[in-house]
Image (tube, rainbow, N blue to C red; front, side, top):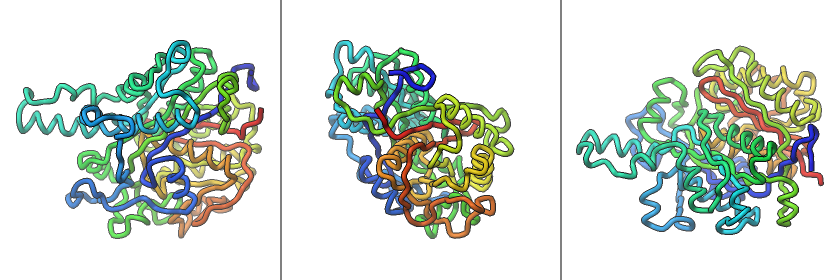
Length: 421
């Protein structure tokens, strides 16, 4: 079955998620709709040496459902997140425990991560300094490098199609899903598991972002620290988690009796070519990504109902994204329902685009737009825009977009549409 431009139509049939709000899609979504903050003072280790001492940590995480005790010791936390969310997505899509034969050959994996196995790297470097290189674990490299998460999903579940990682900072999850879509459209796979995973809440990483003055220092009120689009925002709050989608052709879904959750109809990817951390003036890289995604989808900006914004809670980033939305949507911008999930789960870096894609799909399915919390004093650039402050809103959504932007000036936009056979 062909789409607007003659290529194969691609639907989402399964989703998996772990976040600061819960260990699956249902708990994460219910927390988002309720306006619950998952941000707390860091509990995994003592953050008292840092200027920013809070995070959106995944609490009470247990990978025992997919890994035995030995495997858990030999896989980094970001890989475990990826394996758990992949299993959740496969189960919802009705895929078998392990793929075999032609199904395995026609299924691939793109699991992105911004930083890879940070916990493993920190431990290995510490061991090298304190005890010497001969005491480094033989699993140091395979647990730490960014592509092994995708490899481990395939090893565990049997996919033998295209397999790699996207690594583009905070645009990673968007790139993974978009490139998986393109892989299916050009006929290199019938289905793909795609998403992002990040487990980077470690002192060195938090300290590095703090040294850039990128993080909020509102330590006395962690739940109110992430404030996208609010005039009082002072930086982002780091988070961790993962999101994974099963994407497949309409024909594949029909043949298996799988229920499409939404259709992915557009993807745009651009570079700012401007600055290593700051967005291009006016957000023009983001504008070009959105325009390209909508062009591929055959959708006019006036047809979009909802935007899941990148909205990290940084002063310059949020202001530029507001500019970009005004340029992209023109007079229609005031009729968009806009939300910023990072107000509740923090910035999950390489996982952000995937988790927010899941939230975008759930908004389409349920007709509910989660709130942007902590929006007490909106930025002047938000005048006339519906940023869904404080409480969720009901809205019939036919078309929605999810934006993700990364350090290095990398931009992605995904366009989702309500499923119609």
